[in-house]
Length: 169
Image: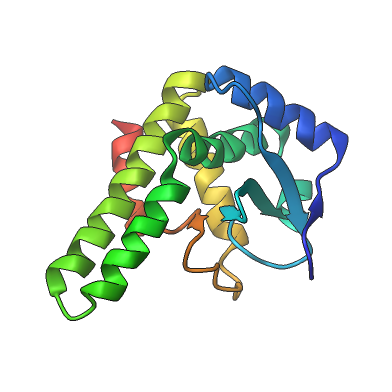
C-alpha cells in the first residue's frame, strides 16, 4: 500500500529527535501498511522516513525515538544523496568486484556512523540501543518487502553482529 503521513504523536517524537540530532528541520515521517524495514526514501527532491505501521505501533516511545534517530542520522549525513552516486558507480562499473566491495563497506560505515550519532545525541545505554535494534530485527524476522535500491534501509549495511559489537563497546 501507499505510505501516509504519520500521526501527530509520531511526528512530535520525530521533531524532538531531529532537534536532539542538531537538525534544522525534520523531514516527513510516513507509515506504510506493509512489512518493510525502516528506511529513508528520497524521490523528486523530497526526503522522508518510512516506517511500517505495525512496527511504529509496537515500539515503546524510547525505542521508537532511537529507531527514528538512526534514520534521521542518515538524512543529516546525506546518505540518501550518496546512494545515487553509489548507484551510478555500480551501473558504470558493475563488472569490477572492487565497486561491489566498496559499496558494501560504504553502507556498513554509514550504519556505524549513524549508530554512533544516535549514541552521542540521545545518550542511551549501549544495551538499550542494541535492544531497540534487536526489537526491529525481531519484527523483520518474518518475510519483508525488499526496500528500493536507492533507499537507506535499516538492514542496508548488513553485518548486524559487528554493529552490535561496536555499540556495546
